[in-house]
Length: 173
Image 1 (cartoon, helix red, strand yellow):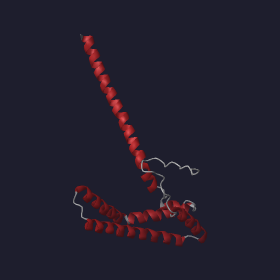
Image 2 (cartoon, one colour):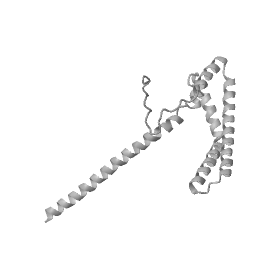
Image 3 (cartoon, helix red, strand yellow):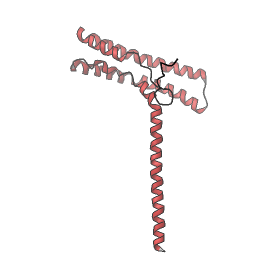
Image 4 (cartoon, rainbow, N blue to C red):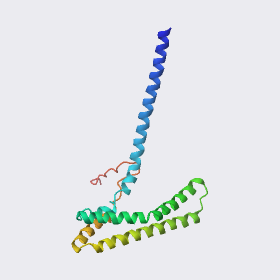
């Protein structure tokens, strides 16, 4: 009887372990599927390189100075950037909570845009002041880098289901 009991316990433990493993594999597969579905959105947002990369072809001392300038601008503008994000989050929270008021949402979104515009203006001012401090040849190098950064974004290649669109047969009548 004791051997039968050990066998039943061993089978129960084995079944629980198998169930745990199958659940883990299924969960990992689901997470991978979700990540692929959201990847085109993340890719679209990440297509434009960061502003500091505009100086990657500058001499090391000017490259460091550009990064320092942009870092200082970011620190100086942190409060306004956080306030803009808070305004947008408040609108989203109101949508989720069911207390959405269109007029209030429009005001909050406008406030967020104003704050972001101010941040952008301050960063641009720092950037142009930095460019003014460069010798003309290095300013051209920075301008080429900025041209890469500010280039129009490419449209993401997505048909909505996380996969690339298929090419159409161009030879069809």
